[in-house]
Length: 526
Image (cartoon, rainbow, N blue to C red; front, side):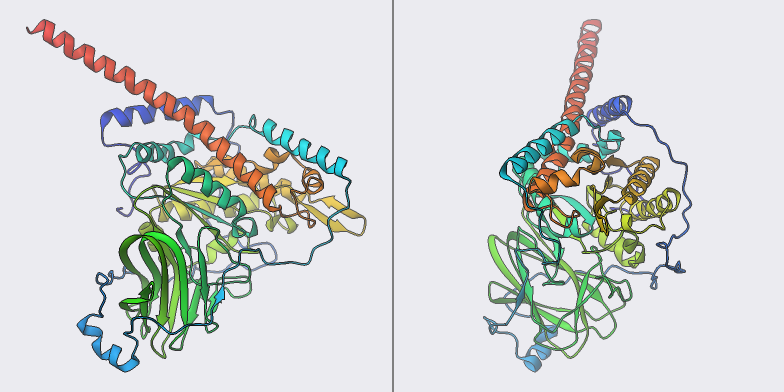
């Protein structure tokens, strides 16, 4: 992808017929969208969260040069690394067994009030009410659905075999995203309909307590430290998902168990960076040096399709920083959850822009989903104007880094807060939802109002009674998250169906006119 390419460059077919159909679908969706842009252009200046000081600059480094891809993997290390092999004695068939801290199939446990005692009848009635509200939520429109057309065009061409490789969908967010319950549900829906492209990008190792992805297993030895989580933001150089892990000693390892045929390691190249050995199912396949001018590094390895266990082991007393890894299949869709517990949207503005932009360009997503707002709602310092300005800045940063990606903003869910008088609705959600809506529409993004879909202000109480919301009145249970995931996919596919019908109808009409024109030419010039 060329830097600075126009937003439509990779979404509209080079074939005139496809471009004509996509444009017609765009016009149709625009004319039927029931929304009004209510915000004015927001200031691009940096905005700090209320109660904090705005930082000057954004963790800039010297201009970043993309690191060269390591040589193709082989069963033996390259000649240039033979001395390193002899020194560290790691060119072995099967690495010694490591004691790993594995990623969890369960979310991190948090202390929360006990679930309210409800009768079976009350729970059943509440569950019915939740179902009715979600059904009615289908009538709540996706706001500015025309913004989804570039993504739909890619999805359509991929579905018809006109685009090679997996189509990548990324979701950034807080603990709702990190749980991988609703993102996992959305992933399953997309992959059932459009093909399983693999797990895509995931954080390396086990970066924080409770980290999980349902489509893979991963872990790390104890010598790694994590950057990017709350309280440990560090220098902001944390890669595509805002999370990195670092080690400074030899024989520290991470592993990834997954089905794929392509593996790619994302890491930081840095002066004096150490080397790592990559293993596939116990076989040493390549040594990768992370030494070099500071910038993003990538190591790509293609193997046979099927189940694989990849391990990456440090070799030196030298710093190694890993951002994450990609596991892909030949085609299909990936839905990559990049959630961090407890964060607000402003966290992304602290990520090093050079590294983030380079990683996004390299990943080249078709869709970026933003799902923040729950944590911000508890901060009484936010106003609609102030938060809108921050969100506009975030969207523009992503547009700069990934100009061909469609951006979908998911508003936060309903939430309560516990006071001395008991549970009460957190009114700060009103501010965040409206600010996100205005920012999304002003910047040409689609907006999906989760709170409205789940029943509006105060609806979380019914979800808790139904066993679909947790006792903290903030998070959902697994069945609740799946309901939300179902609703997101339902609404996206409803708009996609409209796009496909209009596109194919216009293409048919266009083809008919072309055929008639050719017939006229034949009659006029027998």
